[in-house]
Length: 145
Image (cartoon, rainbow, N blue to C red; front, side, top):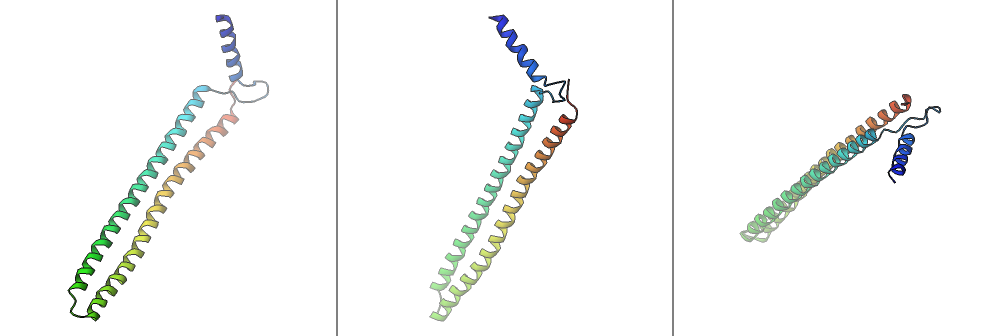
């Protein structure tokens, strides 16, 4: 039984050595494991960057919502204290125009935040792919025998 296990392990070692006479590269299990670890590290980093982005967007949304509710409350109070209908309408118009400007600025903020976050994620992926591709090319140029 032990002899069969030894033959199986020996067969795996030979298979991992590649094909020396054909120029095919060998497979180094440690190198494969190292590449896998790097892949997982980059995925974890991309995930963290995504979560940070989502948290920032949520904070921006909450801040905007709270500001709009405070502005609406103030506008309502101003309208209740208006001396006439024209003054009441003026408060409503002011709130609407101010809210539209704030909403446009908020949309621009969100867009910039999303763009910056997605750029970070894409750069992480591009740099990792570039490194792994370069490592693979070097491996193909210098097969182990």
